[in-house]
Length: 396
Image (tube, rainbow, N blue to C red; front, side, top):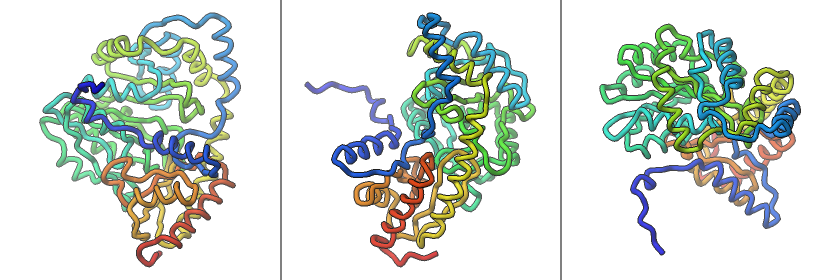
């Protein structure tokens, strides 16, 4: 039977990391050893105190429906954390809790954009931004992130891209896939335009606690931006809780009831016992997250130094997150060809830069959420792939 599908599905993209993961698992099932650098999740277990809190919540009967926007205890804990870390006033009533951070992207774009509107987003950037903009029928306007600016965008080009049809600006710092960090001058330029035109900014701050160089700054902290900022954050990266699916958004007051209705109409609410674990994550000991961060810093040095020793590859050191985004144009291979080659012949699962938008051509994304031993082995395989397959003389 052939179903007549809604036309909007043709505009819906995907997250290639999960597709490559599936291919890699299929190769492993055939007996091939794969080094996984494709999936963006910490390779650490969730801290024991968080797991203990979830178990207690289950034993205590926190297994029923709860308010769509989240339990008051977690909304209050999030409000205190965001207020303290961003230096702004945040009330619990501004917080909406969701199963993962992706729904915040989905609901925000659905609430603010429709056909005829335009949304600015980073490119290369997290693929769900562009996917959801296209899905609602709005026009996706890329803000190219530039290697020679350490993957920040051109401020003048940004200003020229904003017009009367712009309904939302999306930023992500530290960024996936580049690891780039927006500087205060970048945020000031965005804020100036947003305030002048009254355009809201969705600021994806999922990696805000994974910064190696410089300092994290939130655009929500800039005077005049608190009521124009939608802060997106979650528990997956900082607390190694990817499979728990727990995220949140901090919204201007007028958006909260609309986003809450979208939650009600889609998922009803986020699991109560998981929200109780989220309270423990925020308010409990922070030693495990700090240990993870120190290990990611060590791994960053290993993979960046190793990549920069391979002829035909160069890699800017990421300021945050846990991704390297090396330039592979010196190999003469396209991003997709090189990623496929690495997986199929050399047993390294990586992502093509084009998985994150057209401006990702010429790059790979490598997640260094893996052991130092495996990173060194992956580097040896990548070097062999370049040596044996480069289509032009590999140059420094």
